[in-house]
Amino acid sequence: MNYRLIMSYVLLLGFFCFLIFAYLRHSSSHTSVEMDTMKSDIIKALKNDIDESTANLPTRKQIEAVVRDFVKSNPEIVVEALNSYRTKQFAESQKKTQETVDQLRATLENNKKDPVIGNANAKIKVIEFFDYYCGYCRKMLGINEQILSNNPDIQFIFKELPILGESSKKASRAAIAINMLDESKYKQFQKELLNLNEDATDELIKSIVRKIGIDVDNFSKALQNPEIDAILQDNIKVATQLELHGTPSYIIGGKFYPGALSDVMFQQAIDEARTKNTSTSTVPNDKVGVSTESKKDEVKINDPKDAKTPFVRNVDQQDGSQGQGAQGDSGSAESMDGAASKGPDNLNPESGDDRGPSKDKQLDLPLPPIVSPGA
Image (cartoon, rainbow, N blue to C red; front, side):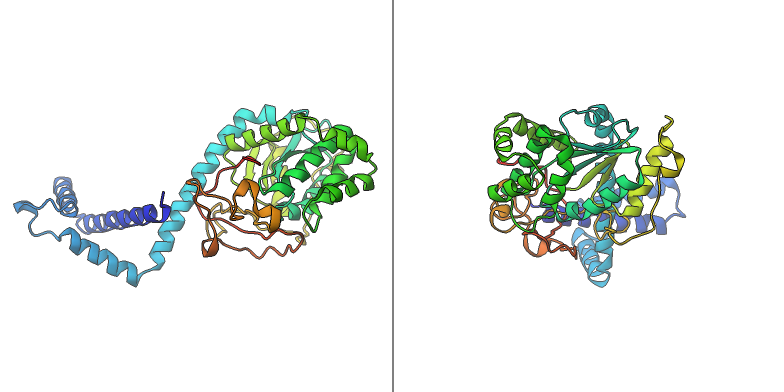
């Protein structure tokens, strides 16, 4: 499906409606009956349905010529219309995802198979869907640690979502195996993987396993557990239900937040969840919700009011093995019609993250669906 062609038709129809509105507003002094008649006449003109009563109205070609000249003289109106459309699409997507979060919240926050860190009795739970080779996920590591340190009453729940290729899948399988062997080692192992400067080979992963004090033979046996792949498939299923289109994605206190958050925005989300939570916290007041003014690790949120396009999600393009697998041979995520989005159509943010083989890349709407690794 050619989305650009469809968008052109939508914009053209929008301009026709604009002209109709302008004409009717200019004639607002007429009675409602007269206005209805004029509206009907203009629609007939657009359809080339000319009769004696509409013979003096401009033809469709004349209207199209006016619209074409107007667009050439005012190209900024096209950007405004496109942004308005995308903002509307973003709001509708957010609403639908939040409704699904509300339905699945109890299950998402209480899955015993998920790796967790933080307060075991937390009333506020933070769920992160992430990929080890996502540039923004790597940036969020430091902010996650800062938020957890400043808020001892919260718990992080991690949903391994390897959507960026074979190295992502290897890393996630290894992390789940570590969590099965020793939950206390997961945090350290996750940090090592997120700080990798290269693809996650078997030998590299084993070296990290040794570094954190896990027996390699036990680890190799744990990797054979079929439950690992079942967990990843469950995560893919949930991500698909939520209609996530990239990583990271957060659910904080039951509220969905797409994309990376700055430390300040993250703390505000925690504070909002805490305000809504009527339960009494057992953590001392002087240790709860300590906000920080530091913006050293701040990451721009994907906000429709701030971004050039609303909800443009980042997808990492990988070199080598990372350009294969879930995202197709092109190394770019596929749009909903299966055509790869690549080249100049992609927006490249200045991520500042030069670690590893990944290069941050953002995709325009339509947003790509979650694709299961190995599919």
